[in-house]
Image 1: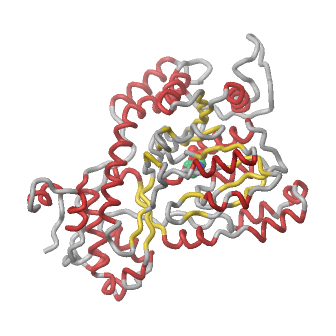
Image 2: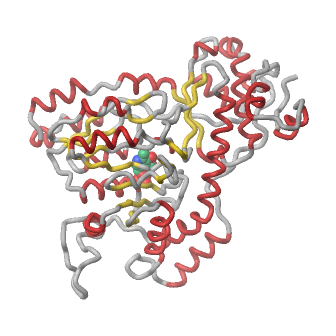
Image 3: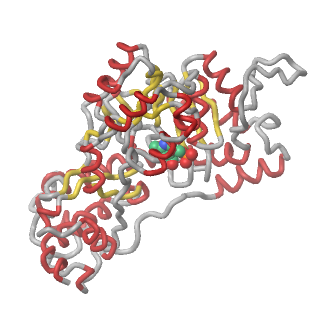
Length: 446
Ligand SMILES: Cc1ncc(COP(=O)(O)O)c(C=O)c1O
């Protein structure tokens, strides 16, 4: 019988006490004789994966303290300021500005860097819609660079071809907590004098060459929305290493009033909006941050362990990391699925079978660059007024990302909370996939 493989019974069955990781992978390669759950067999995953969010008295006390203080707004209290200092310390940033969400962090960055209507901003098509919406809110032209399907990140080798004299910024997105090739992107940006806005909304504590992401660009943007690895329900932050840029961003996020205003005046220094974080969210973030390093370590260890098993399974290709990526934050565990190695079982059916095994999985993003909302925006009267007709025609002609289209049809995601449990959890994911593979033809017929 191909029973459940816990670390304990796995080790007990091992021929020697010094069992190496690769032995775990090869043991999981044995044929799965148990029926998949979809065909009436037992679920590969016993119990459930770790729940999210996590909280205890630390959060309860922190929130109550703000409540009872009566200082609920950042200019009356100290909590958001404390969070900004703590996040700067944690990431190594020179300055941090908390914002009400990650979308606002991107909008504030674009504004502080002077991105205006008529400018072009390079973006990846494999990202959450907010990356592109922030560019559209600035009435800049989003120009898509295809995805490196092996890593799920912007393909830096295709970046230079997308640069035009109007390009003002590049927004690399560290998708899923994996890290973009910041060396290659940085080289193109430096050659053309273009600013980098890192979208690190999914990449808390991810690292490139030992330094935290978000500190490589002119700005680095984070989200603390409920699903994120650092969570205050809603929330965001921008990282800087430039006091003047921080001041401009602060003013813009605070309806035009900067930190350097004269005492006793509103001291408007720019236009702006209200993108402030509340003291309640700041308190929640400080409390959640007490767990962030430990959780990040657990996800990294489990992610690597899962990869050591899944890469042995034909037809399963876990997202590769670039050599400079020294820490993957695993907001998502991402892989490509090839039906050919599963008797032609379509991805949707594979996902259904995984979910039946107690392993929640999804198909991730669909191609963003060709969605109707976007082509409508580019064809709008506003964009026609702002950009030469020839440029918009060229945009349509060149807006093709074939690798990304393919990736969107192959991707499978697991969420970050699934990596917060034990190594046994990881083994049960691998067992579930093995079982489905061994019975793929039967599942296809059912
Ligand atoms: C890659 C990416 N960029 C931007 C955002 C926007 O963040 P928020 O939802 O906090 O506005 C998100 C979050 O959902 C994201 O995943």
